[in-house]
Image (cartoon, rainbow, N blue to C red; front, top):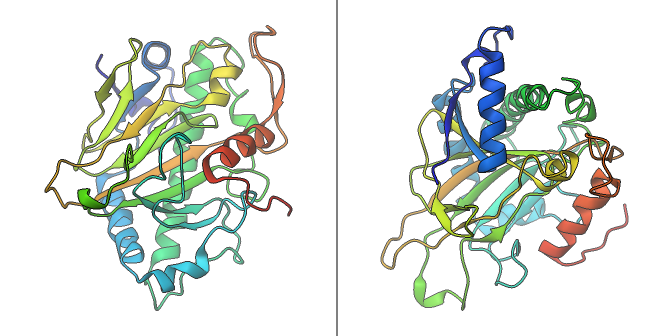
Length: 313
């Protein structure tokens, strides 16, 4: 299995969407999401320089001492925004926590927790700008996905109107995988355990260090390397339910580096979720899956990954 690479030029950010080649793009996108669940998009309008910038400033945050990052820690599962240290997240609950740390950004209000400007200059501005770029791209992808299903082209977009506010849990996540000392690794521990994502679609920008693998239809894991100038997009669980299994959400993971390889790995992910109060029903009118509220479904999955933190608001 190879993950296809599609040209998104006709729908790139900053350009008007035209009918030319749009049908071909939607058909190819449907094939990718039906057969593989993942696709690389090039010419999205998000430049490699933008990706490099956010990774560079992310690294400055992650290299701070733990006591400087601790004030931004997530404290309950209903507050997705914040920092998580190594080993906290167990995306595969049967494995030890992943060997990575992350910082989640879910809403852009001034009172969200951010490192001070003098601590990591430009951090908040860079993160917020990239969040909005990812939001815009995700909405364009969702529109083409609806077109590919021959349904109302705005059906998905209209369910994601509140991205960036406290009414939606779409998340920009910056990730840092520190050097791995294999003598300290727990049994069956990975950098990131096998899992599928929760929401509508996910978008991943990754460095060249490798390690990401995607499960194919035969149940085997295949490499999903970084391709400069592209974004890797996958279907998440709510979208699979929404489309009655036309689009598939598949497991993926990040392996440990080989023994002796002390390199770090970085990535930036954007997880697009429907607004919290949206009820997801099968868009073909079938009863293949029962209706479910977007945030209620995601919170159940979050509780599996982090344990049941305090969940009152």
